[in-house]
Image (tube, rainbow, N blue to C red; front, side, top):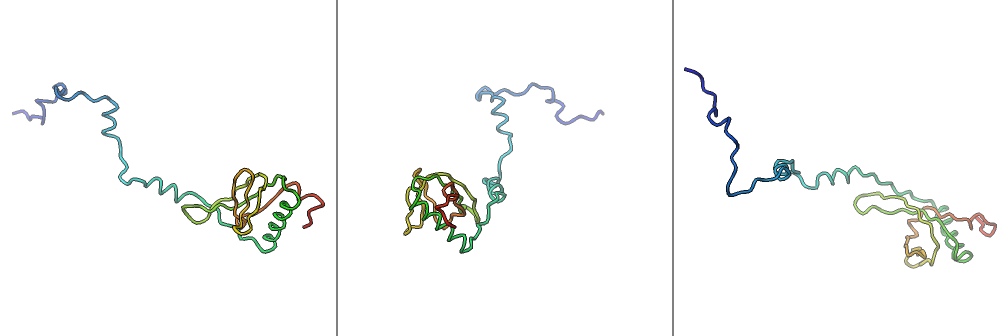
Amino acid sequence: MAHKFPYEDIINLPPHISKKHPQPTMLERAARFSPFAAITGYEEMVKEAARVTDKRIELDEGSKELINEKLLFVTEMCNDALVCITYFVPDKLKSGGSYETVTGTIKRIDEYERIVILTEGMIIPIDNIYQIDGDMFNSEDFIW
């Protein structure tokens, strides 16, 4: 007696085509078998953990005083002068942050709120300012 192979009777039959349900497209079939994310948000968490932030540099009293002198000089002597301000922006999601540099004209300084308002509308906290540069600080009028 010959050994029978399992499913030998149906192995060469054509595939079944339903009369009730339409045949899915190749894209629909592929979507059924595509991998899925078992843990949603995991990749975003990994990217966030890998994102590097800068540590805030604490200025000494001399550097803070120089920044205050430069702000005072700009508001009293050079109202429409272009300044380049480098400041610290704290990260909203983790400790640290980044340093950004903006170039603009100072509209006013609010000493009570301790903010610098540029004519472009940007608001920069004075305590976050790391450096202020501009051509007016190279003149003889500005004394270090």
